[in-house]
Length: 121
Image (tube, rainbow, N blue to C red):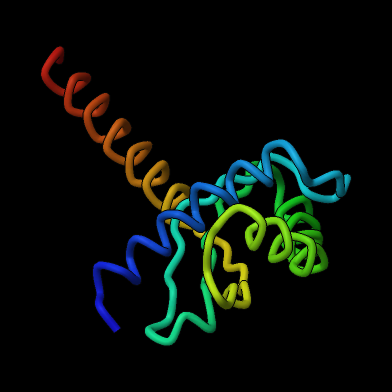
């Protein structure tokens, strides 16, 4: 299948899924969730949804469990909003790239403050 179509379908699912999670999902387990990326398989049967979840490790696990439990509802809502013959099955994965980036940023900040201290002495 055409790669541009697959990427467009992924972007559309990402946009609509973000809106549904923001406004429509009432599960108390699901906290502050951001959809960072959606990778759709070439046959449009499976979509890996990468989410960033704000909170502790327990809150992340609970939110991921809530998302997995609400998979059917989310597919139904996406089916109403996106014109596709078949809505892909969602697999939710935790995106830790934001945590990794903030860790690197804090290390760089430490290095720069140490460099400034050495310059002063």
